[in-house]
Image (cartoon, rainbow, N blue to C red; front, side, top):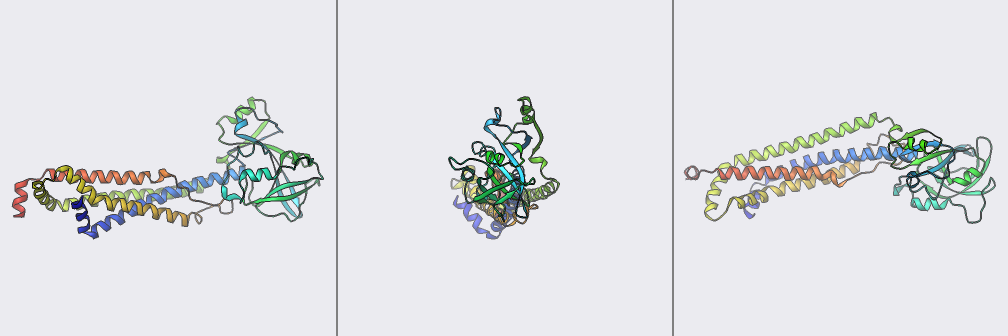
Length: 371
């Protein structure tokens, strides 16, 4: 091991070049993977906020969903109104089932989803009706007037108990007012009902129809946005992965050439060290100690640089900035697996080649060449 470390330090320029080249390969691949994963998740999150959940189906008023949807779904009511001269969307939710049917990011509000859902519950003993002031969560803006009016001039009084930057069911450019579902229906506003399902089976629509529910207009995440631009960006990021792989191959070939250039020196050293008890296994350990620091250090440096560049650029690469939620970095542990696999595989190839090169040493030719 000491011999291998001395070899790596004997030519610091070569070691530094290998480290930087490995960092370029690892950084390019990590950057491409993080950007691709983050963009894919971002598109799903924006679509889920727009729809409300993974699948939205229009229906008539349903009290209870049939199994197995009673554990992954909820029924909401929707309508429109006016706050002064401003149009608002109204969303009625069921406190008992809403949280299990939607996706939630903790940065959407200073409160948790459970706290926001509990906040719209009517106080104990308060009846519902047009004259009742309903607790509401205001999302994506503010209300000029707490006295809301429906398109048919039905009145509703609300008071904001919490706010959120975005919420399931929020549409771009609109202020969303979230209230209790039963209270919204009792207010006299004309509402429509939707079933929201999280992680639904492919035949969810057929199962609900077979259960006797009147359903229609199913929409899932893939139908929300035109993903052509996303696919273009994804392919652009894929070229970074190819660049990282190509640089990695170049690093491996360059290191093989370095080993070949030092063949005579290594063979002469092997002939001398063999007399001192250094075996082929010891030579392999020396090669690991010589090559591993530059490869491992370059891989770690590249992953860190890729993560940092992603953190800086992800917000600027969001092609749908006007839609919430904003972009964020999605860093799955598996994103670094190809880099680690490539480093280990390259190190193994170099060690095997180096040991084979030493084992085929002809002692007399080496002694004659170094005499």
